[in-house]
Amino acid sequence: MEDRDIRKLSRGDLLEMLVELSKENDRLKEELAEANKKLENRRISATEAGSLAEASLKLNGVFEAAEKAAQDYLYNIKILEKAKIKEMKEIHTLYKKMKENEERKDEENN
Image (cartoon, rainbow, N blue to C red; front, side, top):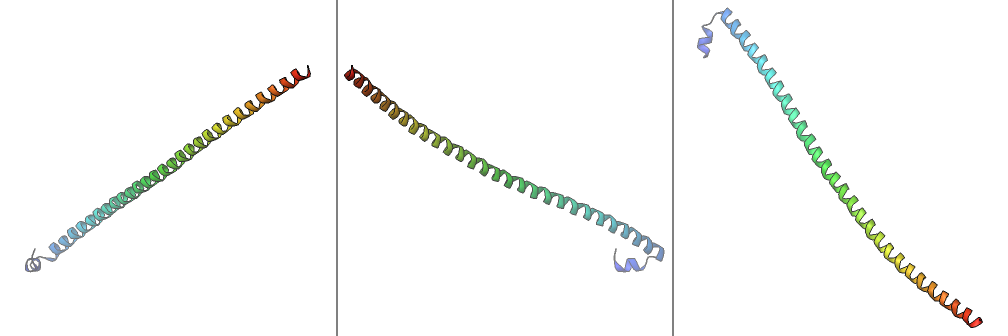
């Protein structure tokens, strides 16, 4: 509506228009508040999704480190096992030699 049309309206019509515009203004404010609330919820959801993704990546890092530690542990156990087997063979060889020496001494004494 143009200015000259508004000037032709009566006070009652102007008041009615003012009331209608005020109601529309209130409704639009409510819509804006609701839209802002939805936007904030989306931001929170996006932040939470980002946090979950970061947490997931960190957990993956923890699991990878645990896997590496387990592999290193098994590797070290295998090395120790080989060393113990070698040591046991050496002990067994020495035991056999000692036993042979004792048997020779017993034969020589008899």
